[in-house]
Image (cartoon, rainbow, N blue to C red; front, top):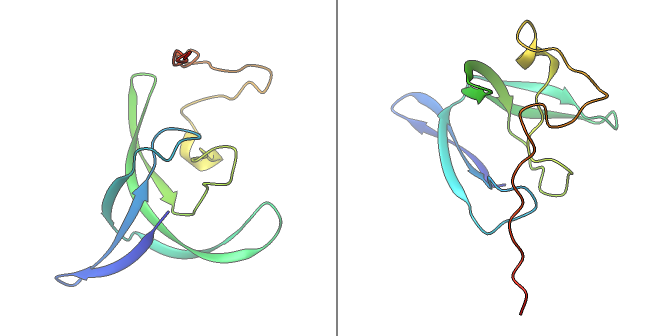
Length: 113
């Protein structure tokens, strides 16, 4: 994920790449957003780093709301985006024993040669 900040007429902006399909880098979308904040974030391994935060809308199960997102390269991680507690607080309950509450994604048909 390329992440670069720039100035647009006195507004701090960030330009970043998004690869919307899990486990595939075939498609890349270049996005731009105003920088909402820069904060220190501690990873699951305990390492702290400064990260850029943006505000964006999330659309999930016919509901849309605004969340703060941190920008980080997650290409080598199991999931490209994580929804944190603050993003879903007061909107959803998590059942750790269930998967695909919104429906299992459709699998692409494999081509057999």
